[in-house]
Length: 309
Image (cartoon, rainbow, N blue to C red):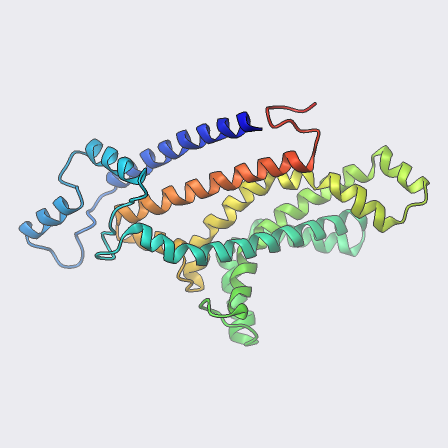
């Protein structure tokens, strides 16, 4: 276990370094300048600003200076939010994104497992058709369109729920569902396929011959084994849900980190883009590691040192 975790941490460090390297140099390759806006600044002011943020140095010097500061938790000062440190912006905005992402992930996991299980158990019935129709819609329609439709139907027309903000439980429902919809589709399809395979296994037939109730067979034996593929993809799904907040937060006016990232891109705020990208990368790598460890705990046949028995 310890050897496996140490190995994964080593891979994580390499991944974060490559991520920061690519992000840093791709931003510098973009046309324009973070200090050129609607009004041209005097040359002296431009030179002072570039010196303040270290842009007067060579690109490689800037990169290694940034990495050195990042190792100490210093992501620099925002170029668009004057005087504000990136770590401060992340600390204020990320709780909103995390709250939204966790709600969407829990909702997607629970609904996806239930729909997939129901579709497999009721194969060929109306329940199966409805579940797979939801899956097709979720895969085909992007989250921002789902969000806009929910705002229009449930917010504007029916006036059941608020369409913007993050002030109460009611405000969280529409963005959480919009963000989770495609994940519900993915999990339900995977769960249905896995359940159908498990329900045809010999040990399920043996359990039926012993007179066990259908509910006990499904929830105690079938679901526990069928859920393994779902656990495996929870890492990438969590990454998709969290990165999906970039669009959803803008649509629903949620003051999260995704919205800050979009503002940083629009204003070419190098420090804000680098800081949020590195933070998200570290968070998602950690989430994938947790999923791998959970997979090993749920299925004792899996050896975390590599492979299966």
